[in-house]
Length: 228
Image 1 (tube, helix red, strand yellow):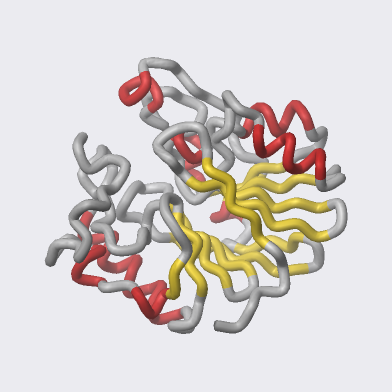
Image 2 (cartoon, one colour):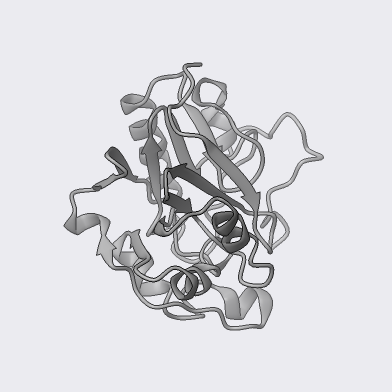
């Protein structure tokens, strides 16, 4: 696959082995799905890199992808958050981001600075166009994010796993349409950086596995919410 022009670092978040991603350009950082409220490892990484300008984009509203936002906003003045309207509303409430139900500890943050719907699903970061694609199915507020030839898929696409749609707000029919949208508008060589697990190529996705029509090839690997 063609290598992206921006280096991307993957850091494991504090809960459910979710992934945070950090792209840097000079003193600018694009942070996808920070959820390091306990460890602060994202802040430490950004400080080591000499970052002073931070943009956060969320793939969706679940707490294991957003719990580090408040820390970043406190550490880096002027930090901006972008996400979908539904996501922005639900990260402000522990019942909306499911932290109360799944951890017993309420996690919240203030609403987004910009909504995908208001900026036509596109933003300029470090002179680079970052596109967002609405992909409801796992959750109503889910988006996927395109930077260079990389797709940050959140929990919409995870390698060799059925996408979870049984949580409140999940819809299988919307997921099917979202996957078709991604396959239609992206190259097979697109590198997918998922919300959990290792990166892979879009061409490697088995849509029947993702949609739960057939079982994953490796039943020993389970999704983070398989047993809920």
